[in-house]
Image (cartoon, rainbow, N blue to C red; front, side, top):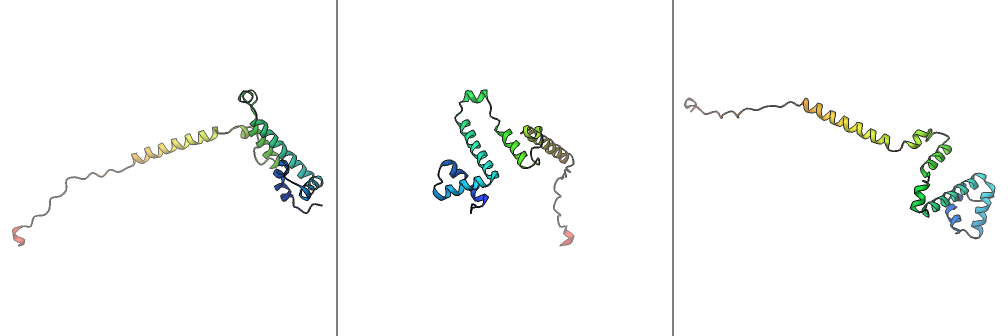
Length: 142
Protein backbone atom coordinates (compact mmCIF):
# COMPACT_ATOMS: atom_id res chain seq x y z
CA UNK A 1 0.00 0.00 0.00
CA UNK A 2 1.37 3.38 -1.02
CA UNK A 3 1.77 6.02 1.69
CA UNK A 4 1.24 8.81 -0.85
CA UNK A 5 -2.15 10.12 -1.88
CA UNK A 6 -3.39 9.92 -5.45
CA UNK A 7 -2.69 13.64 -5.91
CA UNK A 8 0.88 13.21 -4.69
CA UNK A 9 1.35 10.36 -7.17
CA UNK A 10 -0.07 12.57 -9.96
CA UNK A 11 2.49 15.22 -9.02
CA UNK A 12 5.20 12.66 -9.78
CA UNK A 13 3.96 11.94 -13.34
CA UNK A 14 6.39 14.32 -15.05
CA UNK A 15 9.34 13.20 -12.92
CA UNK A 16 8.55 9.56 -13.75
CA UNK A 17 8.26 10.37 -17.44
CA UNK A 18 11.66 12.11 -17.36
CA UNK A 19 13.20 9.16 -15.47
CA UNK A 20 13.97 11.31 -12.44
CA UNK A 21 12.47 8.94 -9.85
CA UNK A 22 14.91 6.67 -8.06
CA UNK A 23 14.95 4.17 -5.23
CA UNK A 24 12.03 4.06 -2.85
CA UNK A 25 10.19 6.86 -4.61
CA UNK A 26 10.17 4.92 -7.90
CA UNK A 27 9.05 1.73 -6.13
CA UNK A 28 6.25 3.62 -4.37
CA UNK A 29 5.19 5.23 -7.66
CA UNK A 30 5.12 1.88 -9.48
CA UNK A 31 3.23 0.25 -6.60
CA UNK A 32 0.62 3.03 -6.66
CA UNK A 33 0.07 2.46 -10.40
CA UNK A 34 -0.34 -1.27 -9.83
CA UNK A 35 -2.83 -0.67 -6.99
CA UNK A 36 -4.96 1.92 -8.80
CA UNK A 37 -6.21 1.26 -12.31
CA UNK A 38 -7.44 4.87 -12.47
CA UNK A 39 -3.97 6.27 -11.72
CA UNK A 40 -2.40 3.89 -14.21
CA UNK A 41 -4.86 5.00 -16.90
CA UNK A 42 -4.16 8.68 -16.11
CA UNK A 43 -0.41 8.10 -16.30
CA UNK A 44 -0.75 6.32 -19.65
CA UNK A 45 -2.84 9.22 -20.97
CA UNK A 46 -0.19 11.64 -19.65
CA UNK A 47 2.54 9.71 -21.47
CA UNK A 48 0.46 9.59 -24.67
CA UNK A 49 -0.09 13.34 -24.51
CA UNK A 50 3.63 14.02 -24.34
CA UNK A 51 4.35 11.54 -27.11
CA UNK A 52 1.72 13.28 -29.24
CA UNK A 53 3.07 16.76 -28.58
CA UNK A 54 6.59 15.58 -29.31
CA UNK A 55 5.36 14.14 -32.61
CA UNK A 56 3.71 17.47 -33.48
CA UNK A 57 6.91 19.35 -32.63
CA UNK A 58 8.92 17.06 -34.91
CA UNK A 59 6.45 17.35 -37.80
CA UNK A 60 7.57 19.33 -40.83
CA UNK A 61 5.38 22.05 -42.30
CA UNK A 62 4.58 19.89 -45.35
CA UNK A 63 3.47 17.02 -43.14
CA UNK A 64 1.32 19.37 -41.09
CA UNK A 65 -0.46 20.58 -44.22
CA UNK A 66 -1.16 16.99 -45.24
CA UNK A 67 -2.35 15.81 -41.85
CA UNK A 68 -3.76 18.54 -39.59
CA UNK A 69 -3.64 17.38 -35.97
CA UNK A 70 -7.05 17.49 -34.31
CA UNK A 71 -5.64 18.66 -31.00
CA UNK A 72 -8.55 20.96 -30.12
CA UNK A 73 -11.17 18.34 -30.95
CA UNK A 74 -9.30 15.75 -28.90
CA UNK A 75 -9.12 18.05 -25.87
CA UNK A 76 -12.81 18.92 -26.18
CA UNK A 77 -13.85 15.28 -26.48
CA UNK A 78 -11.80 14.43 -23.40
CA UNK A 79 -13.36 17.28 -21.43
CA UNK A 80 -16.79 16.10 -22.55
CA UNK A 81 -16.03 12.56 -21.38
CA UNK A 82 -14.51 13.63 -18.05
CA UNK A 83 -17.32 16.11 -17.30
CA UNK A 84 -19.90 13.45 -18.17
CA UNK A 85 -21.33 15.60 -20.95
CA UNK A 86 -21.56 18.95 -19.18
CA UNK A 87 -19.00 20.59 -21.48
CA UNK A 88 -18.82 20.42 -25.28
CA UNK A 89 -22.06 18.47 -25.66
CA UNK A 90 -22.43 18.55 -29.41
CA UNK A 91 -20.33 18.82 -32.54
CA UNK A 92 -21.39 22.42 -33.14
CA UNK A 93 -20.10 23.62 -29.77
CA UNK A 94 -16.80 21.82 -30.39
CA UNK A 95 -16.26 23.30 -33.85
CA UNK A 96 -17.95 26.73 -33.62
CA UNK A 97 -14.86 28.57 -32.43
CA UNK A 98 -14.71 32.32 -33.03
CA UNK A 99 -17.69 32.73 -35.38
CA UNK A 100 -20.11 33.39 -32.54
CA UNK A 101 -17.74 35.95 -31.03
CA UNK A 102 -17.59 37.81 -34.35
CA UNK A 103 -21.36 38.02 -34.55
CA UNK A 104 -21.61 39.16 -30.96
CA UNK A 105 -19.08 41.93 -31.59
CA UNK A 106 -20.97 43.06 -34.71
CA UNK A 107 -24.26 43.21 -32.80
CA UNK A 108 -22.65 45.23 -30.00
CA UNK A 109 -21.22 47.75 -32.48
CA UNK A 110 -24.62 48.17 -34.18
CA UNK A 111 -26.29 48.71 -30.80
CA UNK A 112 -23.72 51.32 -29.82
CA UNK A 113 -24.22 53.22 -33.09
CA UNK A 114 -28.00 53.14 -32.57
CA UNK A 115 -27.63 54.50 -29.03
CA UNK A 116 -25.43 57.35 -30.26
CA UNK A 117 -27.90 58.26 -33.01
CA UNK A 118 -30.89 58.24 -30.65
CA UNK A 119 -29.07 60.30 -28.03
CA UNK A 120 -27.98 62.87 -30.65
CA UNK A 121 -31.55 63.23 -31.85
CA UNK A 122 -32.81 63.85 -28.33
CA UNK A 123 -30.21 66.46 -27.42
CA UNK A 124 -31.66 69.86 -26.53
CA UNK A 125 -29.71 72.78 -27.89
CA UNK A 126 -30.10 75.96 -25.86
CA UNK A 127 -29.58 79.00 -27.98
CA UNK A 128 -28.41 82.10 -26.20
CA UNK A 129 -28.92 85.57 -27.59
CA UNK A 130 -26.65 88.54 -27.10
CA UNK A 131 -25.73 89.30 -23.52
CA UNK A 132 -28.05 91.83 -21.87
CA UNK A 133 -26.67 95.34 -21.56
CA UNK A 134 -25.62 96.42 -18.08
CA UNK A 135 -28.05 98.66 -16.29
CA UNK A 136 -27.02 102.32 -16.35
CA UNK A 137 -27.85 104.24 -13.17
CA UNK A 138 -30.15 107.10 -13.88
CA UNK A 139 -29.59 110.62 -12.54
CA UNK A 140 -32.60 110.31 -10.23
CA UNK A 141 -30.91 107.58 -8.27
CA UNK A 142 -28.00 109.75 -7.22
